[in-house]
Image 1 (tube, each protein chain N blue to C red):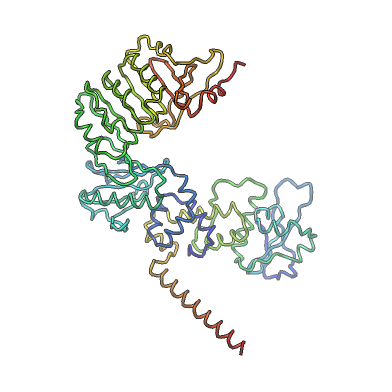
Image 2: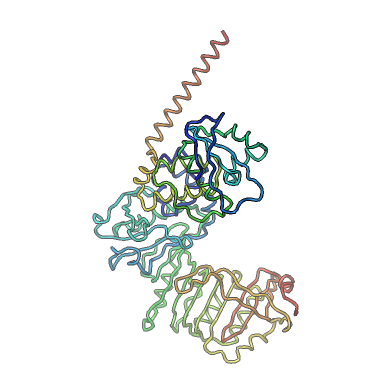
Length: 365
Length: 188
């Protein structure tokens, strides 16, 4: 069967029915195949928004040859596995075929379980191998796709490569005391922080200058008053969720005032704080500048796509906020819904002016 | 299955037997058309079954043939092998007036047969069957290394592609030179 004898539209239909992992291997068959894949799959590739490199939770499910100290990452496209990367110490057992990936020869074999291609390399070759594979993806999907490296600890291998941002879940043992200075050092040297989940049970606040506050999305567990206060003052990202925190009402009111005046939080889309000491929390809604929708009317519901989902939180959108209270930013007349419910403070910023927002309010039936 | 008539020419086909119809008799008598492939074996197919083929459907929609005229003028598909056309006709009959299922497991397993079927189905513009066939072709390389894919789909190496390109350029150059010489000869 000669593939080249098929008309272009038939070749395209065949490629349309191939999984990405198979297209990945076809890419290496010849230069002409690479050109054909690129031209025929352009629309399919455009529909991909994100490529994730992440360590598998259940490696043994994917490959029984896993050893305990292996680093295994997988690139996910939606829910589709693309390939795996693995450090090994004795390649000879695993060599199946070699591919020249962006100038570097890398050993591959196909996983017996998942049939995904698995790249094997020595630990000393890890950086160059990962760089070559990342360059390959940049060539394959282009630079409009978001590339995220997902790590679980600052000590994990985290490559610094163009167009590669970081999502990290720092889920330390409760008894482990977090060393703030080391964390600050880590954040300041890390790639762009796309998403950060951290259990931060410490009395010391992170320095206001730290890149920690620039994370696009933050999820923090166990915040103490000083760290909550610091975050409510210095956060520059888009979405933040704080669980089991202690904070005082005046800090929430100050946060709203600074947002309203346009002084800070320009990128903010969503803030949710689950508060432990929620005494008289409703007073937040009586602060100056908080507006109220007639109780008989139905307010619109705010929700936005999450910047990044994680294994512990794979809901695609932020929790909905349906509230009769809102504030308006003085600089651009944009609205934010404000809600107090079940000891939680929720703040959702609309891409709507007050006039547009009020048009979405439904009159009683 | 549609029945066939071996060895008759398209000009005067003998009586082919009719393809089995669905249990419920149609209220309006159904029109039939005749097709043959490279082997000249004529297949009688209902207009309903032929609707799967955009090419044939387009050809017959404005013909208004009588039964006799249709019989006397079978559509010749000389580029399609007889057994492949038989498969296509069978598929059209089996799926006449029915929604097509998401998978079709009755496609040929042999590479070359599948290859010929893809070309025929593409030519006849039978979209659903083409999709099934292409899925099956795609499945052939699932879990295969690049070298295995090359072998299955007979994909030339870069060196072979370059050599073929050079050869094509050389041939085109020669042809152009030949045409120029011929034109000069004509001018004289």
